[in-house]
Length: 144
Image (cartoon, rainbow, N blue to C red; front, side, top):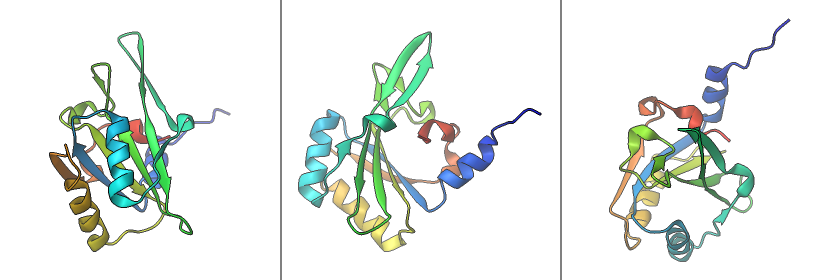
């Protein structure tokens, strides 16, 4: 008997209770993380265990993932770097520098709107858009 991974089910379960924001902020990730931590009082840290490896054109591309879990909550914020050495994690969104995913607890509309407003107030941020999971072709690229 052959076992097969049901990618559709895996994707559906991963994206349950999530919100995804696309961010244009053409600065280094360490600078962007520093600003987020300063403005929001968060403590984002890089999580090397979540780093996403993509192989394209016989080369390895590594996309950093930063993580911050809200104390006393199951809500976790993840920040993906969308670019590495000229390649993109989500190739259909080449204009985005970062992807912000909230996961683990349902976040209401007002909280997402407030999050977007705070991110927009950070220096070098040019755009923050909420993204629907349906518009992402390569959802599996975000799963860690």
